[in-house]
Length: 240
Image (tube, rainbow, N blue to C red; front, side):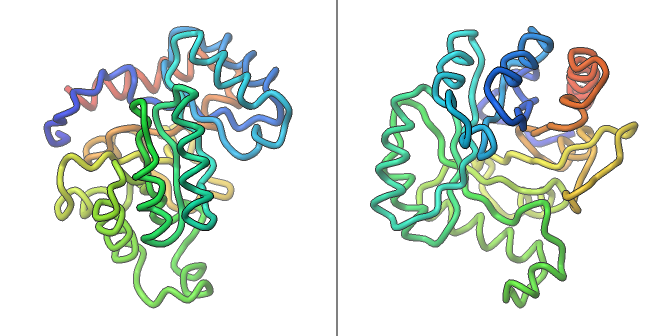
């Protein structure tokens, strides 16, 4: 069983559906097909390249959905602070930040109106060889734990972490740290493509993840609503 969550997150809000689509009209159509089977959506870089990104955010909020803006802010601290401050006015629940301590501190210091800042630890598309190529002389778990500690010290609310590192993270980081886990694949959908460190919903929750980000298994399903409902049922069962 996952540790008790002081935030008492409703089970139906733990699933975050990634709207990894080329333009807002397709994203809206997917949300409408899913209906009440999902309450939380992630919008990221691909959609940001299309006109109507913020109109989509506003539309999602108007539909009563929660929104995770995943743009991994990375720039000089003052620029990141201004971006987070502006996003705070749009009603999003989560945003992501990358970079060093000063960047994370700037993002955390600029948040308002309930926006929570999540620090990216190690992308799920990276494996040990990739980290070596990037110059990290440590294993993935050590890097994730280091990034999580630095994020908390900077005032961030949580981290984005692969489910494979969540158990150790939970053992060593305070429970109030929010953990959002991407790379989630149901047992009957094990194609991983560019994500190398993946995990099932049940295992991720049992390790201590708070929120699960699911993209292709729902987006590419013949019936996205049924796929979302199946994952919601698995979440409910995992939470007991």
